Every structure is written in structure tokens, then in C-alpha cells.
Length: 170
Length: 142
Image (cartoon, rainbow over all chains, first blue to last red; front, side, top):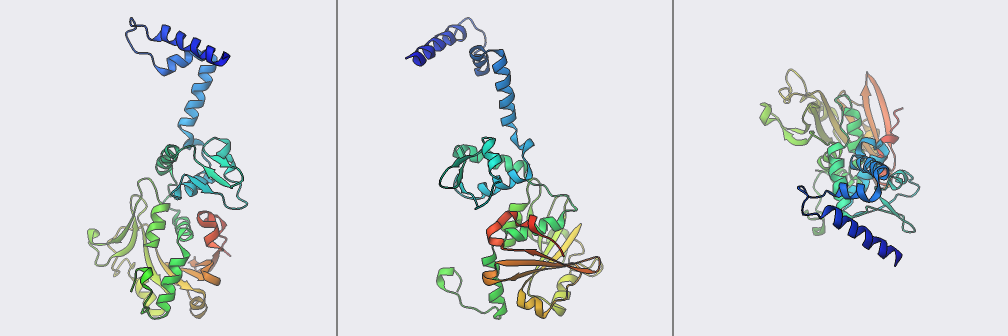
């Protein structure tokens, strides 16, 4: 009841201060927060908010790698590879949650996942002109070895192989 | 297709990977893949090529007579995908060629062989399917 009572009191205070019809401009949410929490708390809260708003500036390469891996799956959950500790810094920063017991990382919501994927797309890895070998190595490491195997096996047999209908190729 | 998918995943920002580039630049042939913007990288793919066939692929980049001479390129490569058996039979590596050697059970191992300043360099990308995108950090040329 105490909590409810204090909430009601706060609400009444806000209504009295900010819903005054004599005000020329509508109250902003930041103004309400400043009123509720005081100047010192408010300034630290705003500083944190700014830090969260542009997290990509502080992302390390490893954090970017984990995020890119997690975003490459369709779901907003991501199974952590065994023995991989790179995700812990992301959990500490609050960008992802760790589902204990299942070994899965989870974005706070599908919307978080969407925003992060947009940010990753914007601030993702940009190659310099002299990084051609690095680019090639990365691309080769991303290629599906099963498709390569099938392609090379077919080629070594003269290119004439009738595959099953389930593969979509006759 | 698989190269295109992997390249699109790798490049970002203003860069894009375009397949079959050549006509717009007035070239007579079609380069397999081209990364645009300030990079201007050209990639030609080959499959178990050696001898004259491989020379023909590399010759396409020749600045005087090559099919792709009109395409502006800062860097170029012929990626030759081969099996370990094929590499043992044809170990020679040409300039501009990168041999991508697949081996092991179920192609679980992949190696890279290329020429650098006249000497052959070999690198390994072990267990590519389990390390996925982080594999590139594990390459060590010997």
C-alpha cells in the first residue's frame, strides 16, 4: 500500500505541475523525470541514456562479431557456441540477456534485435582498400562447405550427375 | 551464389558485391564478382582449374589483352576451389591465383595457398563449419 500510496502522490504532483492549462507548451517526459528524480539523478540518467543511444561507438571487434553472429539467425535467441566467452561483455552491457541453463543469448525484445541489426548494418565492418586478403579470408570462412563439397564432387565426376528431386536439381 | 551470399554478409556500408560485371565498363567479358565504391576489387571464380585453363582465367585480367582490362580494378584474384587430391596432383600456384583447398572428412578443413612476392604461402582454416565467422582470425600463413 505504501508503494501504491507514493505512486498516487507522485501522479497527483505531476498532474498539478504539468497539466496546468495555463502552460503554453506541453510538458516533456524529460521535464517530468527531472522533477521526480532531482537534478543530480536526472543528469546521470541522461548521461547513461546517451551512452546507450550510441553504443556502437564503444563496441569492440569481438562484441561486433558476436552481435553479427546472433543477428544472422532468424530468431531473437542465439545459441552460444561451447567455450565461447565473448558474449559476456554484451550481457554486462545489457545489450543481450543470458538464458541460464539453456546456453542461449536473448535480445531484450524483437524490436531491440531490429534496432541493433540496423545499427550493425550502418556501423559494420568497413574494409580498407589494402585489406583485400582479409576480405577474401572472411568470405571463404563464411561460405557453406557443404555446397562447395557438392559442387566440387559434381565437377570431378564430369559435371553430369543426376541428383535426387528433393535437391531441386534434375 | 554462395560466394555472393558470403560477400554480401561481409561487406557493409556503401560497398556492394555485384555479380557479372563488365558490360557497363565496356569490357568484353563478365567478371564474376566486383566490389564497388572506392574498393574496386575483382574476383574470378574457378573450379579445379589447372594448366591452360587456369592461364586463360588469369589472362583475363591482363592489362593489355585481357577481357577485363576496361574494368577499373585496384585488386584482383582468381579463387580456384580445389579438393586436396587435386592440389596434390597440381600443386603449382600462379600469380593472382588463390587456391582454396578443401579436405578432410566431409570437407571439414579448408586451406589457402597463394603466391606472395614469388614465394608460395600456405594457410589453414581448420574446422570451418564449427567456427563460422570467427574462422578468419585463426589463419596463419606458413
